[in-house]
Length: 120
Image (cartoon, rainbow, N blue to C red; front, side, top):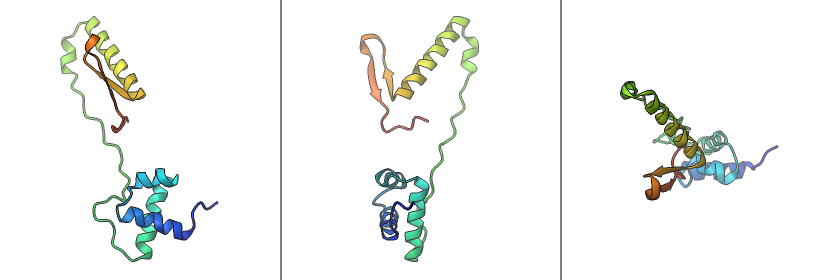
């Protein structure tokens, strides 16, 4: 089942190609997959015989690889200290899943939302 007419697809593609919307914004706005949004942009570009986008916004970006963690400082910790570090890491991971972090401790705790940060 086609959701959008050819004219509507061209309009969506134009919005992406002219940087009015990013691929992700178009996908959310029009309730389509980012790959479909990219296809609409390419359809608009090809139909109007335009050059490819210069700054690779048509490329769907893949997540960056995680940085290597330095575990050398953990070798000097006692068993109890290692357990404490594991608990802290798990709590931090659970908070990230729920969309926030905590700075400080006790009465000085400050909760910070992660709305604009990539959680993966």
